[in-house]
Image 1 (tube, rainbow, N blue to C red):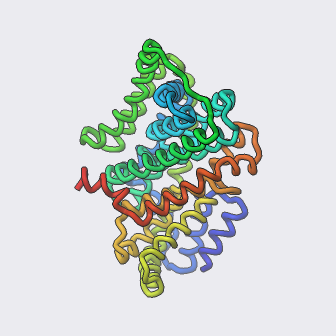
Image 2 (cartoon, rainbow, N blue to C red; image 1 turned 120 degrees about the vertical axis):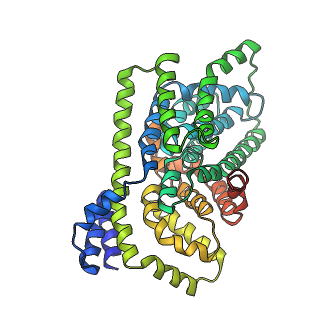
Length: 423
């Protein structure tokens, strides 16, 4: 109880998450253990021993470069052409472009910045309501943690000791279904409002757009294809992604200079460095809770008091939703994953399905006022208030809630591809 109180007090007063975890762990060791404090640096070092962690800075660097370069613009142009013949086609194009870019950046906020910076002003100029433009892109950006390659998914696999390939596959169908339902809502809304957004492209224009967009489209195909064909591990695929995006942005698209590439890499290293520190500090906390048999005690308590699998899933969802309003999914999963893992077997919940549940409820937290991080990204980009952006996102958040409940209680949706392709 003392450790938990220390954790939340430090978090509330604004101490960085990594320091919160480390100080809480040290307090717990001093009170509940007779082990020397040399265990702290030992466990911090051991926490970084997983080879797959190297993928995190590489994916973040490649995502930053793609967002700064020309890949986002080319994807938006291709999607607008693809959906030009239907009502609300340009808004739907934004949803699909966010899905594709999510497979490049693996980041929710990076997706909003890259796609939203191009598309939101364009949609408003085309006559769409500001609310629809801002709400659709802000919501769709959250797909960045659901569609692979996602850094959050990598951390779920590290924390739960599961296959990265299976976790990646599990995100595809939920991501596609969510994007499809959002797109259907936009189509119905625009058809009801008789929005006129139909543009005819000549054959020459189509050829030009396809030619410009081919290399951008190949990016996620090459990265994910190398993993699923066995050509590369996730870490090696991250290195392939980085090399690929640098080559096409500098030598093919000729948008970025070497100096700009280096600058984006520096920013990525700062971001990934903070993640690595959280992982390292969380290793100390995980050691403490394991030696104190906290996971076993929690599992026993839940088993004795929670008899319904449905109720247990709702409790997990509530934990990740509430915590996701204050903490990043990566920090949450490396803290809560090992604690909850023993209980998953009691209710016959697959660890891969658990990962999707954690992602979906945290995804909702990213869009929920007043704490949703994605809301603040759009506020800064569009110079809007929290109330205005929250109102714009609300219809998409309601749909996300319905889809999250469906994915939570129908595990076959997320487990179909992993079970089919990676038995």
